[in-house]
Image 1 (tube, rainbow, N blue to C red):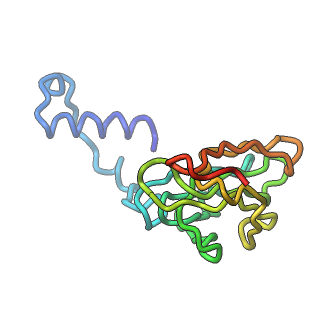
Image 2 (tube, one colour):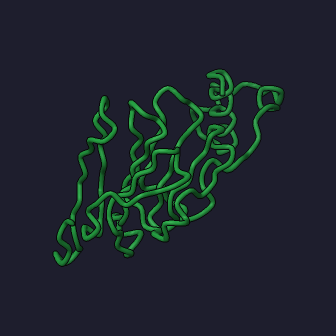
Length: 174
């Protein structure tokens, strides 16, 4: 949205709400400034909360969104539409998603979300080398909750994983 449109929108909202400062600065708002704006959903339709967003370096249209109770979603059109890509794994609780900077089709997903939005434990870290079409569990099966994943920028097989274990201390990393 152009800066001019944001300015006029701010003035219009302040004026409509009767803000005292807006009376002095109020201007006539031209409806044409807003003619191109339309409401749309900008996220996956499940869960209502994205706990693990990740983008593809150099690609402004491809993103992944992990949710506490709705799996992993992918968009390739800048968020206009989203598709579930993790349903076949049968783990809904996601704590981390990371894309390998050196190989954008390599994605890591840490299962088990610590946020309190989900009480479903995960079963480790999953890896896809085909942009999320297929997944393989690559370890930490007993960790239950993965909070973050960092991929080495030059080596897509080297990752750092933050794994808590069980909420009561029951889980041991695997």
